[in-house]
Image (cartoon, rainbow, N blue to C red; front, side, top):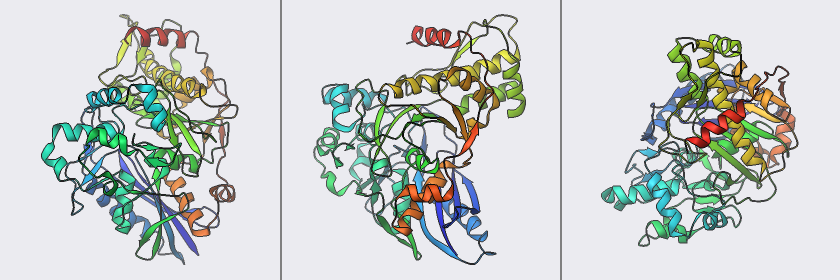
Length: 470
């Protein structure tokens, strides 16, 4: 019996899912943690990702011992944007700077001016550089660590690094490449002129990885076919079985709102990133830096678990509740890398219920602001699909359902990124399109949320607080 494996290498951990190629049934899974990070400096040793993968893989592979068959293909889905700079011996010259590291915010501003402003960047690569993007992190390393910069032989993304450890080659895919700030989804080419802004003395053609197609093979690992892999949001879109017109709110450490599109997008405001997807289409996306971690932080302060936190939040009533701006660790959309959280409208009789609800309301409003930005660049006439750890919050689901204008569905896929990577691996094995695998595995279903809470004037009060702190 053939199996395929999907890997999710996120900020927090590496997760492995092994699935039956024919049915999509999960036959084994495991995870292993990554070192904790806290912005503004958010860095990890990329070799720790490989160690986490080896640990998780050994556990998952042991789960196959009772089954007849072997893994035919594997694919890596990884956190976007992270800068992995390697020397000639493939040793990192500096810890990998992750997407939520904001130390390169000054470099984002500098790069913006070098090309003539936001509109020029959007036209060039579909996105406007912010601290999250790989280009800004390269500029930071060039500016602050010249000795390390001089040793660079290769620059990879997190998923590229793990694929390299499997195959020995240097490859990436169009989805993850589109989040660097120096590869164009519209043309399907690197923008060497943009890399030259960072360092005109370097021959970049030997530094960046080869961009493979959606069904290309990156190499082999111990007899297992290695698919090209992709970024985490692109993999999640595959795992969720996303249809045209559907939108996703992915509620993890960060929050993302995205959809699939047939044409590339270019938003000069910088709110919508014009990414490519993992199938040959496009994935316009809005990212917020603060989502489920805000709920976790407030639950910790209240000394409650997630169930009690939800109970408290849903018990809060009245339109005079405090409002929270949840920019705890800086914010990406809107672009406020130095922001902190704001709690407004607090009175001496504030309750635990109101504190919990303010956190839920703030996260929901931030995500719906992202959805509004996305709607200005894409037709959204289908479902609003919730996924990620925060989608398990009963309170957050009810608040989003109360404020949204689309049917709200919670995906029944537990690990969308790992599942999407497995979809890619299966499509490569069979040489078929991804949709065939998604339909055969029954991906795209979920639970309709029919319990909604009345938001009152929440979005207006949130917008007033957001705009007053700009």
